[in-house]
Length: 241
Image (cartoon, rainbow, N blue to C red; front, side, top):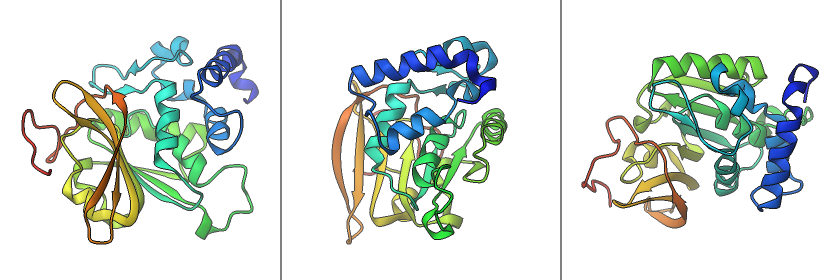
């Protein structure tokens, strides 16, 4: 970490050691590198900075949004199966932290030799105006503004201007993949999202097939905030499956 972040060094190292011990964080490789490089404390409200390296979700003021627990952020990187050069759409920017982690995977800051074609990009959509500005400021300060574009709007409608996407991530729970996002996903691409199952939520991967259908994979049980927007969470209604 840079010297200006040295006050968080001990807490950061303790979290890294804990996530390794529990099997969430690999000992080396792109996911480890991304997690180590991105300064999590730069992506939480000042009032929450003392808890930046505690393995729990943290609130983003009274917006109803949170920054996910570190172990979940790492698991998402694993679930997305990211590669350098991928173009990624994230629905729910929040603080910008997950987008920064993804950016390190698709366009690593240490890989100055990567050509423009091999350097991916992250487009992240946020519906809450306060969080749009917060995420933009955090990403600029942490050095990711050139690899992450923050857009204000309804994430369930996607961002067709940059489609098709290799990967799409939803950081809020819905009933099923919103149709506009399925349309904007490449064939063979992965859409990862928490799906409301009534009594619980399941993190799931959906892989787009050549005929446009989705092959789904159950990953783990989770608890995320509800998805907002036109194709957001609808209680007791399944409008896609």
